[in-house]
Length: 443
Image 1 (cartoon, rainbow, N blue to C red):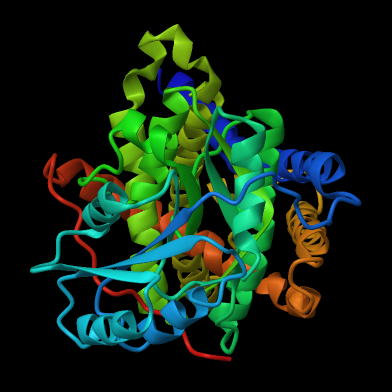
Image 2 (tube, helix red, strand yellow):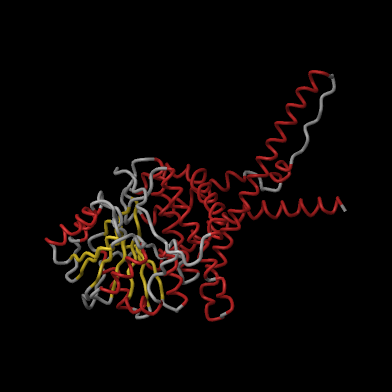
C-alpha cells in the first residue's frame, strides 16, 4: 500500500512539474504565432492614416482621484487632440487634494471641458457611469487621468465603428513613459511582449479579448447601454466590461495604432498593489462568469475562460514546486551537516541521499533553463519588433528583458496566490473604490 502511494505521489509530482514547465512554453509560442499572423493581416504595410466618412462627436471620459500632480498635463494634452468635434468630461471622484480646483480652473478657459464633482469617493466605475450618462455623443473614450493620448488617436477608433456596427469597443495600445528605473524598463518590455502580443494572439485565435485596457478604450454608447455600463463591485472594471460586451455578442477588438502614453508603478510596493488588484480582478471574472458553460451561446468566450483558469493553476503549481525545492534544500543542508558530523567521528563516508528535487529535475529535458530563457528572449524580441513602429526607442530596452522572468513572473505568481483567499473572503457586492496608484518617476 505504501509503495502504491509513493508511486502515485511521484506520478503526480511528475505531472505537476511537467505542467509547470511546458505550459508557459506552449503559450509563449502560441502567442508569438498569433501575434505574427495578426501583424501580417492587420499591420504589415498598413500604416496609412485612416480615412473616415464622417466625423461624429466623441466624448472622452477622464475619472480622477487625487491627481493634482498629473491632471493639468493630461487635460491640456487632451485639449490639443486633432479632431474637430469632441468633448472632455472629467470626473473628480471626491479627491482630497487640489484636483477639483485645477479642473474647475481649466474648465473656465475651455468650452470642451466639463467637470463633474462627486462629494465623496464612489469608485472608478461610478465615475465612468456618471460621465457616460451625461455624454453628448454616441462614442465614448475612457482613459486614465495620467494617460497622454496620441493626438491622432480618435480616427483610428472611428474607422472601426463605421466599418462594423457590431463593434462595441476598441482597445488601444498603451506605451510606458516611466522608464527611469529597472522596474519601469522591465514594464516597457512587458507591455509589448505580454499585453500587446497576447491581445494580437487572442484576436487571431479566439476572436475575443480577455481585457480591453481601461487606460485607453473606445466604446459604442449603445453597446454600453445594452450591457448596463460598468459594474460597481468589480476591482478591474475594464475586464468586466469586456466580458459583458462579448457575452452579448458585441465585438471587442485591438487597434495597435491607437497609442496612449501611460505611467506605471516604479516601486515594489506600488507594483505589488497593482498586480494584486489585477489578480483579484481576474479571479472575480472566474467567479462571476463560471456559469457560462450552462449556455451554449456563450461558446466564443470559453477558450478565454479555460486559458485564464490554466494560468491560475500554473501559478499554484509553480508555488508547490518552489515549496518542494525549498523543503528539499533544507533537507539537503540537514544531510550535509549530518555528513560532516559523521565524517568527523567515523572513517565511513556516508552517501548523499537522492532528493525529490533531483528526481523532478531529471524529468526535464536537458538544458531546460536555456530553452525557457531563449523562448522568453525570442518572445520579447518579436514583440518589440512588432511595436517598434509605434515606439521608436523601444528596442533599446531589450537588454533589460533578461531580468523579466526572474522578477515579474514571481511577482505575478505570488499575487495570484495571495489574491485567491482575498477574493474568496471579499464581501459580494462591495463597491470597488480606488486610491491614487503609484505613477512612477519621469524619465
